[in-house]
Image 1 (cartoon, rainbow, N blue to C red):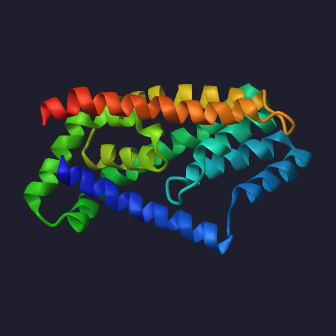
Image 2 (image 1 turned 60 degrees about the horizontal axis):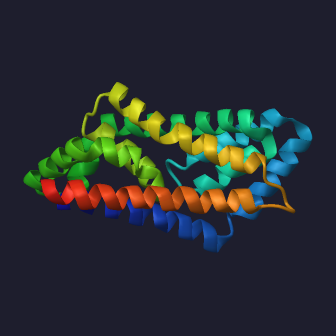
Length: 218
């Protein structure tokens, strides 16, 4: 399990660095995203949906505030269309991450971990725990995209991956966009409570899974 955790930590560090660079350089922030969506809303809801989908797809390469963007999708587009835009972006990101890693994952693994036995152990660990990791990955920013890449690199079947990805993503999106759709500038509580609730629930699920399953099977 340690080699797998090493890979995850390296990738999280990389994505975190991109987020910090973006934040401190002022290239992109939540206020700017809101501004884009407001401007796009004046033109057409289609532009709003396109921006949402694009931002969530770009999250594969540069860390984005995924939950915030998803909630904003519900706020600006309503529950139905906000969910559709968010799902298009997240499914595209997951599928692209899987496909790229399926093709080039071996080279990345070889670069991150030089020892062959450790690479094989990392792959075996993900094959054993990958399903639950994908299902619970929304607990932490950047972890879903990392799991998508690990699924491709470990040669998990795409059907198995996409089923897990949808089981993880669809409820997350439906809840977040609904909260956004019933929130307003004067009453942002539904969005705030939903963000806190989703994160807390997924972290509790991670804790239970690690405590009662992972430790017993190490």
